[in-house]
Length: 314
Ligand code: SF4
Image (tube, rainbow, N blue to C red):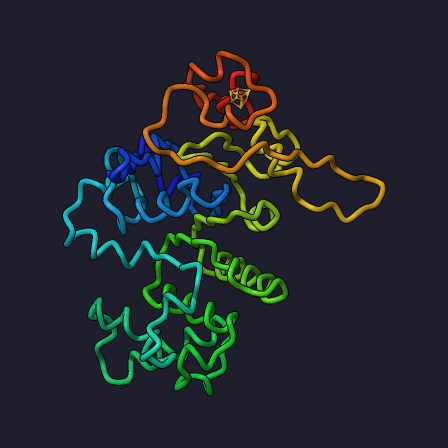
């Protein structure tokens, strides 16, 4: 299967007064066309920075990203602007990401105006109507402003905006975490339907492993800027190998009184990826840590079945 996105040794560091923050640290992975890569981890693990850096909303410190074989990182800003049509993003908080002064119609038209698309008479109105139908918003809401809409409809507008440019790859950055549970399912189902009908490829960023299990074909677990486990969904859930992934998995509620999971409680909060030392970044919280873990950084190794893990125990 063709990998629409290939990421090689991608790093994104930020200089801060206390030193260097390694937000994304040497990430290598690929996403096959038409599939969903779920990126999972706690807040602050670098997953959103990874998503933004891949589509060059942030400039990487080093590394490469290939889109359909073309290196995006070596492209000029003008070339990236042209590619932006293909590479879109859906943001976490639809209220924050939509301009409150624009009505629904204008919000969906704006990316078309910026990209000088559909300039003929009435063409943009036609695209707006098509997008509204695609994401299940009534035409009657065309003149409404974001504050007049409920959270689910606002997120549908965010999705319609991204789809108006007919993208091929979408970074979905926690697109349902600001929504009520009942609406989360509707938005996830919508994203899945759109993926099937338009052969879209998603990077779906979430802190919720249950959501990732529902939507992803491949799952990548991140910890302090690094990928610590990467596998196809079934393999990751049936054969979870990294102690951190095991702890995340143990927190998912099981709908059965007979088959309860023992919750693994992590010792402390996530630390910061500031000036990281050699060794496993999870070691201070890991119940299996041994002296070697504090000194030698575990490599992300293939253990078979396309399953990669970074842990000295595996
Ligand atoms: Fe735990 Fe060591 Fe594995 Fe890190 S390398 S997850 S500290 S056992």
